[in-house]
Amino acid sequence: MKLSRLTRTASFVALAAVAASACDDGLTEINQNPNTPDRVTADLLFPTAVQSSVNRVFGSTLHYDYASTWIQHYAKIQYTNEDRYQLRTTGNDAAWLGFYAGALQDFTGVIAKSDSTGEVNKKASAMVMRSWTYGVVTDVWGDVPYTEANKGLSAIAGERASTSPKYDPQQVVYNGIFTELAAASAMITGTGENFGSADLIYGGNMARWRKFANSLRLRHAMRLSQVDPAKGRTEFAAAMAAAGGVFTSNADNAMMQYQSSRPNNHPLNELFRTRFDHVVSRTLVDTLKSLSDPRLQVYAEPNANGNYRGAPNGVVSPGVPFDSLSKIGAYFLRPDAEAVLMSYSEVLFLQAEAAERGWIAGDAAALYRAAITAHMRYYGVSAAAVEAYLAQPRVMYAGLPTLHLQKWISLFGNGVEAWSEQRRTNVPTLKAGPRASNGGRLPVRFPYPTIEQSVNNTNRVEAINRAGGATLNEPVWWDK
Image (spheres, rainbow, N blue to C red):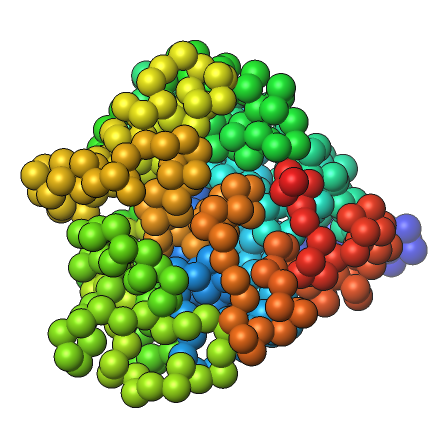
């Protein structure tokens, strides 16, 4: 019997469908690599994002080659380009990409995933970390992509994709940070899901995450002291009054603890295994010596003669044998050293300054003494030594200049924040080295990375024109 053409066609389609089904039976699963999943959970994404962001701030050239040398905590004794204000394109590009294509994208993904599952504590933790990261990014580069940033993966972010995000004015970025930190603090609950052991900052302690959100808001509020003090005062007071409060002891410090073995050892431990390019700056060593500051023995190592000697900044060579200079203190180069994102001491300094400015009620001198005490005690300085230090006439509280100098000292090891604070306060008064480039001017911002010229140049140029340039010399919005 002959089959009609229609029947033959139908039979062929049916047979093909069966064959396709048979061929696909199990093959799709076989072709999936369980070690490289295409859908990553928030619990896996969050610690990766945290480590990426913290590494970028505390363990990359942004910290040890640029910010910490420009603030004259470190000095370079070999390959001294950065200490003489000569940027390497690769370092600048890597920092930008590391934030935007790495941590910020991942935090945005965590927020979206946690929002979809209703896990508000996880969402809040990621919001705080995203705000902390954006704070670093905007303080380094000024106007940056924010409202349209990290939306290329619209399926994850749940928003319209933008592959060429506009550069928002820094004021807009700061307003966004204030809003996000307030929202994160408000949504945290004492019950519900958290990241637990996947939380590299607080191990799932949501009460401390709330304190971190409120305390970080203080930092950014004070940054407005010269450009918009009314807004700064309002945000500062709101953060102080927020539920959960701010840091109240060193136990609240926001920090990530590295591990004693590779590959999770501290990045500086890894770097200084084989290199000897950095020592402690002469500016810092001489300042600590003049104050008989016991933290000198923590910050620096004695030289070959048992003395403490810093290197000058902004020179081609220190002009003396390397072993006559003090290396960075062993405490900071331990494999299991911690990266302190924000400390109780910093919160006390912020409160002291706010009290001095009349933003909050309080005794500025008492808060100043408490800030120094908290910092010294964290590093193991005895109570008696702290009291002796505070009793010195040059250390006694005498207004904001003394406070700002002590804060500069306390921010050793946190180069980016120290650089931001020195730009805001101009304390201490730093001088460029004799062989410094940039016309002998201290850098006050990073130029935009060259990679943006090829992928987002129109928005980059608009931001440059708005700032009056984007070299090392154009201050960011809050730097008045």
